[in-house]
Amino acid sequence: MEPMIKTYDIPSEERTSNTTDFFVDDINNINSVGLLEIVKTDGSIDGCTASVIRTNNGNIAITAAHCIFDYYLQTWNTNLYFFPGYNNNVPGRVGKVYAYKSFIWGDFRQDATRFDYGFIKFYYPEGRKLQDDTGAFDYDLVIPQGNVPTTVFGYPHDNSGGFVNCSKDGQHLCLWQGDSFDFPSTLPNYEWYRGINVDVGYGSSGGPWLRNYDPNTNAGNVMGISHGILYEPYPDTSTASWAWHQDDFSILF
Image (cartoon, rainbow, N blue to C red; front, side, top):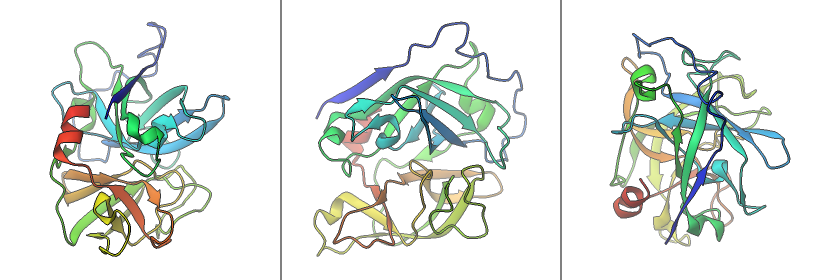
């Protein structure tokens, strides 16, 4: 396996031009999850979800590889803009953050259902860290097995997916809670994935699956990210996540 790296050439005067000067003194709002705006090679705009994870660098988020790299065109998306804390058509406290580099596994190019996760490093004002202004999630290197209570976030659009009591217009952060689970061993390559019993919809790709989520502090451990619905014979009502291994996660990281 070979990692792939994309660098986004943003003029220096623009790299932090849309990042606010606000220093977050209360990270108990969900600023660590955000809307990921994708600029495709033809200039069209698409949307995904990303979340800030706790790192030494402090400026890194996790999302789906297919939000970073266009599998069908076999090319990188042109630009990625992150709006942490975005909700109800309103940007979060830190505004718009520009991607600096993206990292995915090259194996994703051969099969969009494999290794569908990646990391984004952002431009951020010198002397500051994104995670200090938004909060950040921890992450699991070893994915738990069996049924695990899980909280999932996303920005579904076009009224797609099964989130309830949430406007599915791409402008609202939606939440689902229930058990994530192992797929039956009768399914092909079942050990590669975990599932949840909801279709998270378009726009929720890359959204975090959180173990031990605490709504009072918005802390938790990322144990997966939303890929989407797998091909038959997998059920068409269950969203899957790639069940990364400690080695492939750590090496890409």
